[in-house]
Length: 326
Image (cartoon, rainbow, N blue to C red; front, side, top):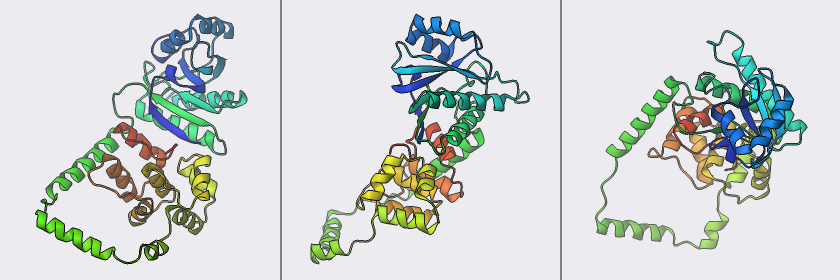
């Protein structure tokens, strides 16, 4: 763990291996295949010739040559023919075989393109779902980091119905926020309010510090115990790196990023009121003027706690993702 979706040119990825969406000949082509061969240099084509092609759904490994990675794993995705010719199983096999080869060669980080979603015609939302499910299944019990790189912007990567519903939710939240924005108070009223706050703060500071409520770390660990979960189950469901979880467990005053705090709320399937409480422990709140917050709140209110579906939607709206290295 974890699994990240990022906007990046895969030929610029500094990781152990990148995956090439190749054709059966392995001799280069258009799209990602052409970009990788161009960036790697002619030595890559020479080694590919010796591999004598690759079957659809399978994968083969070469050196990275001039690329900033050790290896290139070449896999051949299916051409979309309506979904009735085993395309899903073949596409899943591309990801699984590539990850198996990466693990066999000691790779700790791997970057994929969205296989078959270009000239091979696989619908992007469906291709993303296959990629996410296959990668996260493989990562269960492993510490490998996997990136799914998306180059450029185009159609949403989630089903159009979901995208449109979330869009309406965002527009509604922002509109309501604008309508109820309060007028600025006169200066005298502000001064009065500040005086009241200072009066409340008069008691001894040491007294107030001793009366502090439980921290984020304490509440998180309590919720994990209350749900009968193992630590590993929780941080994997949150798409959180094991080392980051160890920091949180080992430091009662650890203050995570907002994305990390929300990832744990999703992993624990907390209702909205408990999510807000957990966020508050880390010093954050949900805001109706933030797209990121509105999208996450939408899924929590719907009782939909699949962090990868949430992240796919966040990515489609150009927002930060939950979990990962936050």
